[in-house]
Length: 219
Image (cartoon, rainbow, N blue to C red; front, side, top):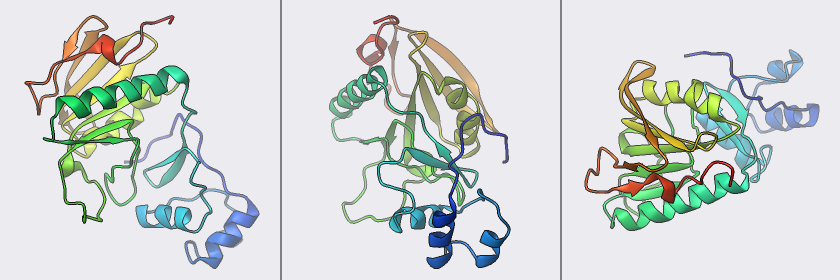
């Protein structure tokens, strides 16, 4: 799946290209071509981090082989993520793990970082990536990134078969619940208002008040 992204892509300067060639991440001929962008596999993307070419503090994610720069996290975004992680961690009672802003490997060229991922519990000694088959629910908290999260990013989650994705719309003060992935869309989309209650389809006994993790508009 290849689409024109609505978000800025990470560019590489000449010294970074030299470092990528020196580490064997890209061939010499790629640098000679003069391109400041190219597509990466997940393994190459991880190698960029291991080599220090991508700094640990950079907010980036990999989609369709392209490294996308993520928006800085504002206070409302941070609060929403923190409250939801806290509520979920308590509500699931050990039945699932709550991963905060960690990557999910959708395929060999995509490793996005949703704000929240509710995943199966695994062994402490597991070293493999989190895969779509491990995921019960993903949550994106969106303000400046709303169009991207509801567009290209959501389409990739659907294509990977992620069963449920919530998009917390901080602009409108509502939750967009997406279930039943079909191709690059979700067949079932519903809006839960700020005064509503939502339950993950994998854990129907868990009821979360939307107002407990999405701040009121204008606050």
